[in-house]
Amino acid sequence: MTTVVATFQEKYPNITINATGSAQYQNQLQTALNAGTGPDLFQTPSRPQLDVMATAGQLLELNQRVDQSAWTDVAKEAVTVKGKVWGVPGGKYTVGIAYHIDLFDKAGITSEPKTWAELTDAFTKLKAINVIPYSIAAKDGSLTFFNYIGLASSVLALDGFDQVVLGKKKLTDPELVAVIQQMVDWAKFYEPNFVGTVYQESKALFATGKAAAMDAGSSDYNGYHQINPNAKLGFMYWPASDAQHKPCTNTGMEFIVGVNAKAKYPDQGTTFAGWLGTPAGGQAMTDNVKDLPVINGVKSKDPLQQKMLDTPLDVPVWYERFSTENIGKVWTEQGQAPFEGKMKAADLATLLQKSIDDQLALAAKQQ
Image (cartoon, rainbow, N blue to C red):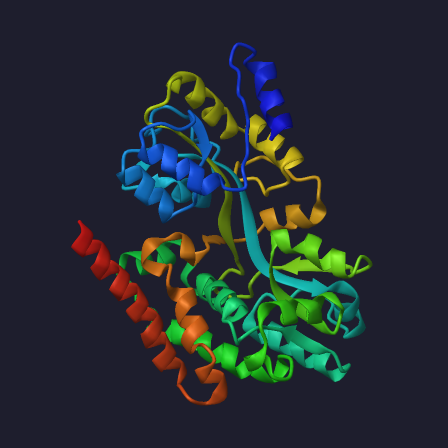
């Protein structure tokens, strides 16, 4: 961030930005904001906590203050609450599927699967060479959750996801129940006792090359290479249910900057925030902080990151919206049951939808 700030000050030498950090950052920031003080600029949490800060009057509204023309749709949604912009997106992480290129080559998989049927075929080829096709963690629900939202996001696309968030489309619809059923049908390709596996065990299985593929975010690759420096890893998008749908990724905000509603220097703070949302600011973030860019036209020097940016479809991670933030909790508490034959896919879909309905009811009550 120091280099990012220095790049900004080359263009705006009369504005001084003092960047500081703290291990207790979130608690210290929230305490200061609650007291009506705090820094002029700060890294905000992602939604839905961003919504809370905006509603509490702690953020300066930026609708007419910053240029949003270069922002990606997902980035703009991530900082927009009730039609108004409350922060500037500076970087993101992206979730899809990591895989071992050498194992795919050995199995004779010549192109990345783009549909469920193609992924099934790839799994079959990997199993034939005595490799675990897919490493997943069902015990803590960490990876089954991401698997579900990734596959479901391809079915929904961005507009469909927005309808789910608003309660206008249901996770009990047949095409979304089919997502859970497909995950169950793939169980024969997961590692033995995947229902009793937690995330760290699943990660080790994949990183050491005992499993060919695994749900992964852009920030996970450094960890894989720490375990296995020689791993040759690729990234594929979540496959679509059929050729009529697009493969996709899920994106979450890694960095958002907000301006304090009670800033001492609001114009200067807004100038920095606005610059961060331009191609020049976005490129500085990508080159130095290494987050994936959220600005159209910004490129990454890392081919793997650029592959993530070139996704055919990008949908937010579901926990960054209030109504869908408890989906992961359902997968943690109940997600093992369909794989154990104790619950039908439609029954789990009902529980997932109930978590949304409960959140929507809570939101209505709070208004």
